[in-house]
View (cartoon, rainbow, N blue to C red):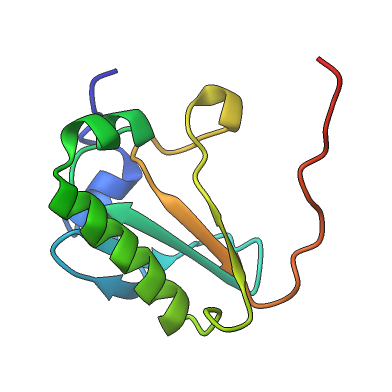
Length: 122
């Protein structure tokens, strides 16, 4: 799938749309979700044009990948959930309900997260 240069995260990266920034470096931008599902709900996006994890894995350098993961960890620390715990979620593709076609990770925390993956019959 071709990367959509007009997706909302691409527009945020270009400064065309505002965000409530948490962190930024050469590899990632992190900001608060506009419709938070938890007390802490931060989105971390790579600066490169990657639609999903497969594209990120295939196209990003090891430096970009490492920089992105360091940014995720730093954002959890800045959000104050590194000690208490947090959940990382990356919705990847239509079946996972990925709403923005730019690879990103959600950091959820700020209170206990109830629930776990439930096994279903195939």
